[in-house]
Structures are given as C-alpha cells and as structure tokens.
Length: 275
Image (cartoon, rainbow, N blue to C red; front, side, top):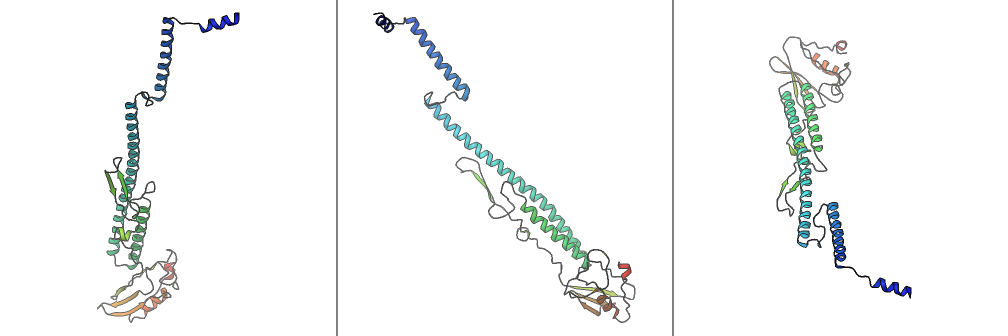
C-alpha cells in the first residue's frame, strides 16, 4: 500500500506555471552560455549552418578565398626573393665584365708577349668567376641566370588569368650568354727585337718566379712562349737576321745561342743574376 502510494504520488507531481517558466529560462540560459562559449573559443559568430545558413556559407567562401590569396601572397614573396637574387648576381657580373674589359685593354696596349699572357690568364679567370657567380644566383631552386628550366611565372589572382612570366637567361655559359670568349694563352705570333748597335736586355722569369737556369725550356718558364711561337730578330733596317721556332724542348740557352750567332752580336745569359 505504502509503496504504491509513493509511486502514485511521484507520477502525480505537477509544476506550477511559474516554476515551469523558471525552468525554461534556465534551459535557455544554459543554451545561450554554450553558444557564447563556442563563439569565444572559435572566434566565429557563426560556427555551423544551423546558426545561420546564409552567413555560414558566405563566411566559408570568404575563408577559402582568403586562403587562396595568402597562398598567392606567399608565392609572390618567393618570386621577389628569386628576382632579388638574380639582380644581385647581375650587379656583380657587371662589375666582373668591367674588370675583364680592363684586362683586355691592358693586353692590347702592351707589346710584351709575356704580359699579354698574364693579362689573358687573368681575363680567362674572370670569365670563370662570372660563370660560377651566375650558377650561384638562384633562390629556392630557381635561378633566372641559369637558362632553360628556370623561367619564373608569377600569378596575381586565383584563376591565373593575371600573371607575369619572366624568362631566364643563361650567363653560366659566358660565350653564349654574354658573347665573351676565353683568350688563347698560346696563340702563335712573331716577336721582334731591333738590334741597333746598343745593349739590350731580355728578361725571362722562371715558371714559379724563382731562379732560372739556362737549361730550362722556354715553354716551362714564365715567358709566355708556347711551342710553335716564332722569334724573329731584325736589324735596324727591318731585315730578319735570325729566327727561332720554339718547340717543347727549346731551352733558354738555345735562345742565347740563336742571338749570339748573329753577326756582330754578342749574347750571353747571366745565370747568376737570374738566380
């Protein structure tokens, strides 16, 4: 009896209108707090299509476009760095080209075959530096100075209808890209000495700048001579009185003997002075 009465009493519990209203208000407040907390944690006023379908899908579209624009901005930043690297490379290459021009001018202004060889060697070394510099003027795997496969395309909108293409040049090959060719250090030619009845001194340095002996070959010395070069000795009237064709075995003493064989000329090699 008693247990049945308790069950009957529990099933018969009723709420007054005021209590029901308060309970509904509490439920609404709890829902509102949950919504506010969700907005605070996400930073979004609308977090699902249930909140506001129009606003949700509009925001989703804008967020997607913002992501695309951020990607384009990053790509443009990378492209700018690539262009800066190429610009710095061109600036440095320009200075090297000016140095090469100076060496070529110096070589053209001297009649000394030895000096010409030195200037030509320096000129060729500058061309090598230009090539190496061009190879090192890239950024993030893209080098606008390295020719094929390095063209740069920069897009300015999401569908790539607005873009700029920058074609690469090839300065790693200075002959093709810049029209500069290495100078031949051993180009054949004639060297003339006018014997005019006065004392003349011909100085030939050792290959390492050290002591020079009469048995050293001319091509191994630092003379600038190579096998096949021809030395011509002329008198005051311009008539050839002696010639010497240099081979790989021609020594300093051979040169002295050739000059000494000229009538009226006495040639000697001061080995003590040379050393």
